[in-house]
Length: 381
View 1 (spheres, rainbow, N blue to C red):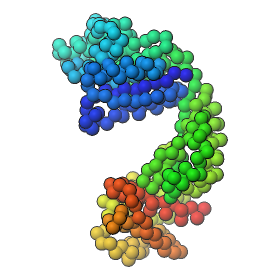
View 2: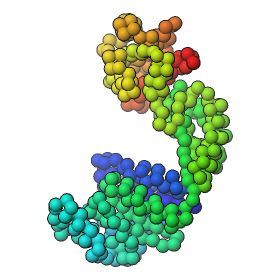
View 3: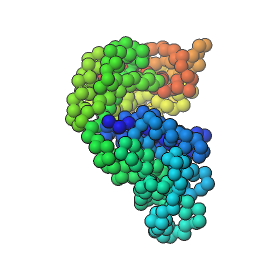
View 4: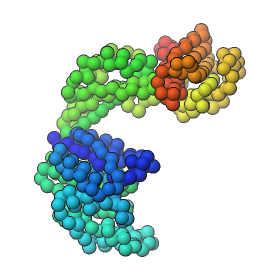
């Protein structure tokens, strides 16, 4: 099975001015056809560095995909770098120049002289027509290895990946398999605790099991490589069953599920109303709940740290069964979180201390509060 490397090119990526979304998209597309990603790299618009990275990648892997650096300006050096990595010259392609001119005519524009640079590709390379932009892509192809250079503009890159690159790779390397991942989401349990419960599963080779920690949540990723999606699903289900048996109600959902979405669904299922108050969260809890349809008038931010009576009053005014108050304050060592949950039967209070990065405290507080509420709502089932 061939493996791949992805090289994202652009100084703006290194400066933090733009986010590299291309690598994620390409990786997901390659995963779906069973191609492993060995490495991803971001490099600036520097001809020598791009050439060096491509040369290095060619010693390690079968498929190399670059994005960016195919524009008409001097600081778009990908064409020259790929040619140098293959020890060939750039070659002017009249057919590609005609395509560029036709694209400009469709846009009622006239190409400038520097646009002609885009019609040069490495000698021996196969051009890939770009129907939605001026930058022709190209591929340097041998029996064992392919280097494909794509535009950095996401809509152009995504179209070429779907319509040309993926079909070409499947045929060229006779790809039959797939890689599929399923992510289980947990709350109310730390990464080290999750690890202790599933550490033996993390040693599996196929499917593989990995953990990813977030503030207040830990994800468990199960990834299977198989000949078909059905077989991959079967393999994942077998491991997922073991994970669910061990973690129980710490798991609140999978894949695209969110903690706030789970709360909203439970409230709908049991026909319940929730009101919330928050202090020190910059409206984070309200925005989170409003994103899943919780009425804005039921979520309030207050300046006072004495929010218990205010919560009780708001719950009565809105005729709500549940009230949740969250307060975050700087502590002597870390961040202090105070939770109050009012239910039809009781009042629950929790105090916790967060010792992590202060910028993540609000997210941790929101997830902690929602998990507290989730666990009480689950008791209704």
